[in-house]
Length: 183
Ligand SMILES: [Fe+2]
Image: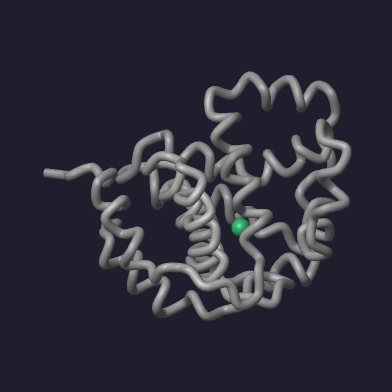
């Protein structure tokens, strides 16, 4: 069952692993991402999507060194069945699209790829590379495309070594507000 306490303990247990190829931990990355969304006035669903977007890495037996070993771990998809019963589409779908959003931005924003970190550029190739025009059109037709792009921009910025953020407890009330209560 997905609860704020379960998320908090998963972060406490697994969050200190390094965020693949970057000099910060998974927990630092997630908190920086959610903090960026909050500071830019995004709604609860987007802040929570930012907090949880890489939960697939924390649930993965391969952890986040998979990309470094040349394997696309498909973390953006693996996490969806875990989240979908409990959280609304405004949280879940942008998470499922956040890798596609990188491939999309490489195709439409000439400056985007150059600004990616080395690790993110390396994983791009494994994840299918820059989108072709047909893939761009398909992505743009998705109802959650804009939200996925916002998540992606926060994701890309959330790699600052030593940046102070609030602790996870600061964000958990937003998670609680969105969780579906199950009978
Ligand atoms: Fe990320």
